[in-house]
Image 1 (cartoon, each protein chain N blue to C red):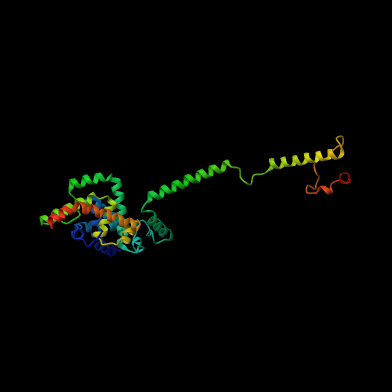
Image 2: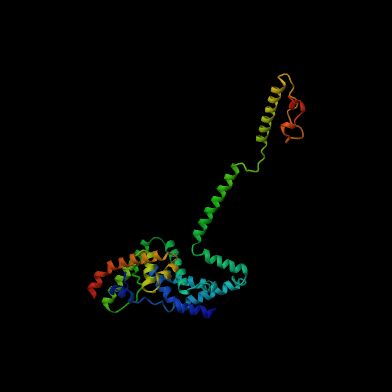
Length: 168
Length: 148
């Protein structure tokens, strides 16, 4: 059992961490939620064994936990304020100034998206999930997943296009 | 929406922050402690039939317990309204005594009128209640009625 838990952590913790950080934009909340997920898995290992796709199931757990946490903590505005104050970015730092500028702009633009669009954009762009997989993980219809991705991506394009054209 | 566009490719290429290394042992230790606490309280929850049912039910309900609680409350209200409405409506099995006695009185009245017409106003219509053979047809009533 301990070995299984370690294996699960090594396989999925990075993806869950990135997803949770992008959603919550708070490192402390992300840590609490990640711990909550693995405590649940430790107490009920049969939950994961019943799932068809472990990653999808874990993303589902993470998404629900993050939504609950965000609702308890208040409105999206509070997260925008926290983001502005702490400059929480889901991306790795880089010494390259142009790259750093683009990453900061991308992080800010992602933070402006509603959480439901941000979740889909993250899972599509950085997890490489299909709309069917995203729909199953977030418990939404595939068409809804596709439209949220489209709207989110359009907003990102509008915000980032001028900087991208300038930097390339 | 074309992922092959350069902007999308550049966005996708941005590396995500790694999970802090020190979190691994902290989180795994917490999870192990939680598992051992659950184990020390008795048999594993899913090792018994009821335990397995409870765990599966929790897996169904957990994602949105508030929604399930709200739905259950709505059903309780609906059931309460249904039960209170039933009390105001008389059931089909209630005895029909009032309407049956009204019908009987009408029958007796008609019989009395018939006797009066046949025998005259001075005639005693006799007992109006058909005795012992409520289902007896009129043709089998007393002879003096039939022969007139």
